[in-house]
Length: 357
Ligand SMILES: C=CC1=C(C)c2cc3[nH]c(cc4nc(cc5[nH]c(cc1n2)c(C)c5CCC(=O)O)C(CCC(=O)O)=C4C)c(C)c3C=C
Ligand SMILES: [Fe+2]
Ligand SMILES: [Fe+2]
Image (cartoon, rainbow, N blue to C red; front, side, top):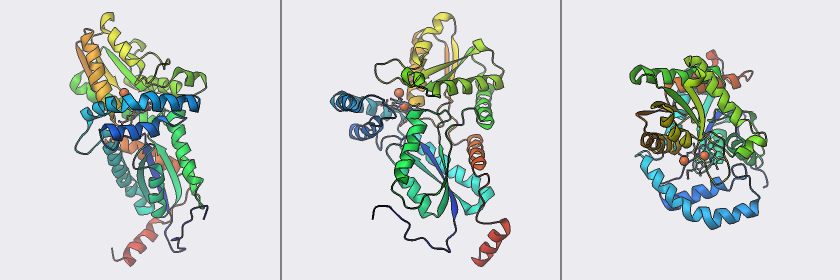
């Protein structure tokens, strides 16, 4: 059989709406072999590294996968927890909280699962779980506020690769970004304000985003513009003047030029310019992960302090905070517009009665 069908389908079954939240993915363990598997999958994606395939295969297998897995495993060890990788457990918590939030309004008509673009649980397994639960309509929400071909675009590829194998395709909606969604901006601004209540305002707020190669901007990727727009809207909500905040780009990979200004170079330079008290927030990361906890929380703190900085604080990602879950629920609700739900309130009550609930 060439296409995968749904042999267990019954006309009596309840059709549901499936919501898949996704994030980048993370290794299964903070060990070199797990890192090699993860990095091989991640860095083989042509959306991530846009270099001619044969040349890249040689570099990846000949150099990068020989060196980086061990180095990255050591970094992951510093953030690993009893619950595993922070990115994974925050995403799990987001899924559970979002399921509960949507159930308040839609009962069990809406089912939420989570998946990772690379590693586990895979996008294919997340979709299968949703279809097995009776989802015939689907919303995919990649947890990347700003669109980039390397992240959001690649997530779409993974969904479409899965769809290519299926006989039945659902009604389908895909959230390609929410970088300027008023609820998202308000939630980030609120978390910064809350931070200020106990820690005070910094001399400068650094809004640090994961970088991408500068070439991608020239090729037409909207990521750079979306990051700047997110920053501007957050700054407006906070009433910050231009000189009170700066947008920077972190997590460079490889030798070519990436989006500038770089976070690390900026933090090394600021004390020399008389800026000694800063706070860093990462509005491109929906969950804390290696890149925020270790790179921003530890590595960049050292750069800043060694350069003569006095006060450095990292403002955590929104993770599974209720305010963040409200934002995600609102984004999903907007996607559901016009989709009729299987049950009305009264039908739901009838069903509960029939089931003796
Ligand atoms: C938030 C958006 C992200 C963009 C855009 C992005 C682009 C991008 N990343 C790499 C290479 C690596 N990224 C790594 C980790 C990582 N990246 C993101 C998010 C974005 N990446 C997250 C959330 C994480 C953390 C994952 C975790 O497990 O906590 C890594 C792995 C770590 C390491 O070895 O340093 C690499 C490699 C490229 C090349 C790229 C754009 C082209
Ligand atoms: Fe990355
Ligand atoms: Fe990093």
